[in-house]
Image (cartoon, one colour):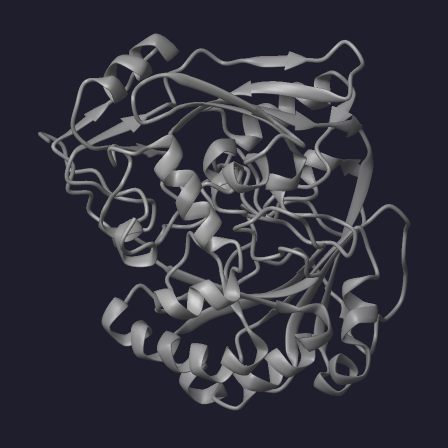
Length: 414
């Protein structure tokens, strides 16, 4: 390939023959139709080989920026290479907002949607739920457009890059709004056991952070419209800004202390103008039914020392149910447990496998862009529309232009 291309974390070195950076949709079509396998590379914030290929990689970051607000100001059409931080600034300038963001504004919109990446909030669906239309280049190089409500749309949105190269998305938008961000330290485990769902519902977006070194939660991050004062479920207001990972400097964290600010500089945990970390980490994430959130925490607690030995931090969030076939939140209000591990694959993988065994009775669905070891048969029980998705893949890409070893492992035989 001539250049060493890795994912953001550096744990995957892509094996592609070439990396293309097209500057137009027509060039994307030519690359896809040219023969051979291709995969589309987003911002690289996945931790497995989802984007890898033995063919060619295509980056859409060089496409012309498209931010077209609809006449009724209810939606925005964007190009396939735009990042959330770029889009958010443009929307804010127009007095508009997205319903939610992930913790990082640095990730690409198309990549986040394709993997059902999410923020938090009892009434907030994952980022893919904002999509009302999608345009992609299918396996033969021809463009396809799908709109919400049309056959196959609910299968195509969280598409894992398997259906084609996404060249544009149309997203629902809402009027701009302000939030305040508060951080609380040392949340007692007893309070979590008694009030977990009350905690997760006490704000527009709420995250709990723990390093599992002890029974208590290190930090609670609340993003709220309303001001608040005093203790919170036994936790103390932080005496200064915090980083999600205990002990790290908070320079690149978004502003805290209850200072009002626009949605796009409060919902993410990290500032767009800073690199959030060195990338020296691995990540896994599992979604369980919201009612099973405490049981999931108990499952992790049952192997606390082993988890803590390879963990940087664990984040607990909640996401509303949706109807997208491959969403971890498909037809299920969810609690998600996100694990940021140390950058040691050999040490982390056995812990991930054991964690999955402990969470298995709760039908824990993995995040597609993270590290997981779940086998294909189990994935079919966890994602009941997976076979229908496989049929959609055959329809859009019968020659296997966008297939790779990662897809072959989770969708064998198609």
